[in-house]
Length: 113
Image 1 (spheres, rainbow, N blue to C red):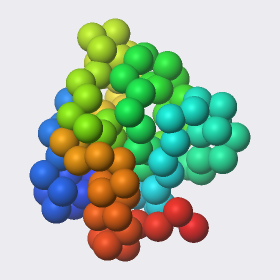
Image 2 (spheres, one colour; image 1 turned 135 degrees about the vertical axis):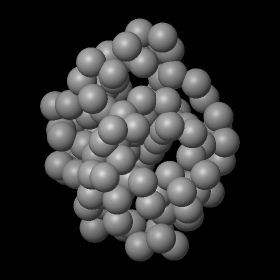
Image 3 (spheres, rainbow, N blue to C red; image 1 turned 120 degrees about the vertical axis):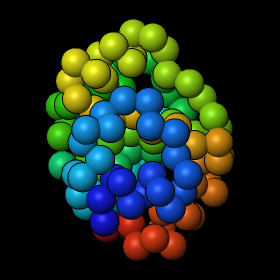
Image 4 (cartoon, rainbow, N blue to C red; image 1 turned 90 degrees about the vertical axis):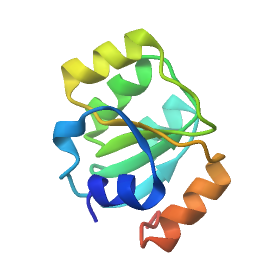
């Protein structure tokens, strides 16, 4: 499944990276701890978090993640948006809480395995 499919099916708001929505999502990963994501996320994962600061982009680049979904309608900081644009990292926003969003991703066939 591509990021474009996820955006369409879940009604996500694309903040950055609209040119990279054709990237494949291998699996999902949800965490708000940077150290956890750095240690356990895999290349191609779609990261679900409530963190909005620019360090999320650095972690996404380091781990070659397919994108970042911010939950609870949280808006990324301006510095985050600038960094995401320069690094070409898709940042998406959902109004859903993390639990509901992850359930929807799972129903779409995106698992954590």
